[in-house]
Each structure stands twice: as structure tokens, then as C-alpha cells.
Length: 89
Image (tube, rainbow, N blue to C red; front, side):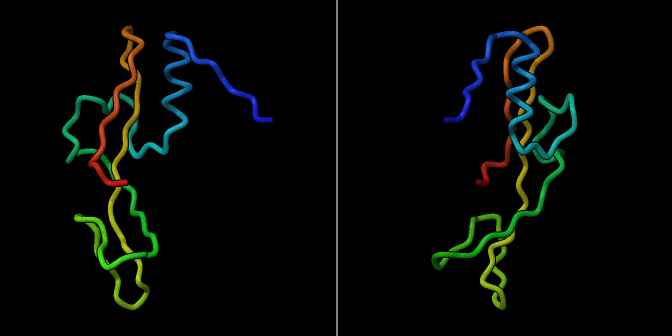
């Protein structure tokens, strides 16, 4: 059975939880314009006729390629998790 971590409202626990995300940003990026956040190229096999709205379907490989942005960080002193993304799974 897997061990579950119980998180408190401490800044250390908030940061530990935020580090579980596959972030594309550097520290202190929350509040920045999402367009300015760094991205990571992601590709997956297309299982239907469409790719994501922002993706490109590669005809030769049947892959959908898109840029994903995700930034999960804690606000200093507030112990609150902030998340910014470009709404692409």
C-alpha cells in the first residue's frame, strides 16, 4: 500500500506539494503573463480526428504536438498555491 502524505498549510508543505507538478516555469513566475511563461513541447498519438486547438497534427507520425505551460508555486508568506497554465492538457 502506498504511503499518503498529509499536507498542512505551512509554506514548506505548500512548496513540497507544488514540486509534485511538472512545472515549466522558474521560481517567482506566478503573476506573470501566461504568454511569457516558458513551455515544454509535448507530443502524443492522436486517437481521434482532431488534435488540441493549439496543437499541430503530424501527418506522417499521427502525433499531436503542442506547447504546454504549467506553473504551480506558493505565494510567500500567504501559504497559498497559485497555478498558471495555458489550458492545454
